[in-house]
Length: 85
Image (cartoon, rainbow, N blue to C red):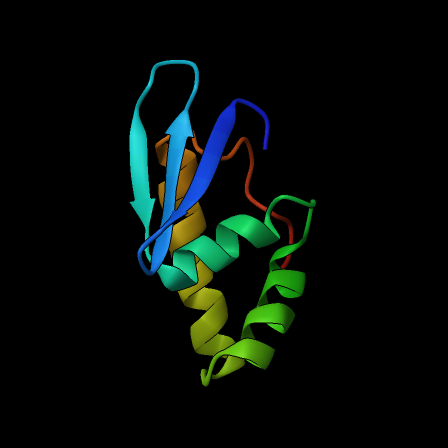
């Protein structure tokens, strides 16, 4: 993603916003979502990837991912929410 640098740290990922130097720690699952977002994806595509990796129902996965993406958008870590369900 443009304007950010990320690096693995322990069981997650640290993300640095180059614009202002703010940094965020993302846990393992959040870090996986961040890496998936390096290529444009819809919410449904994210759900497909995550359901195949984690033991979670599709509905719960999509609800959790939607909430997480709203948090990322509120912190200006992503520009727009992926389209989907």
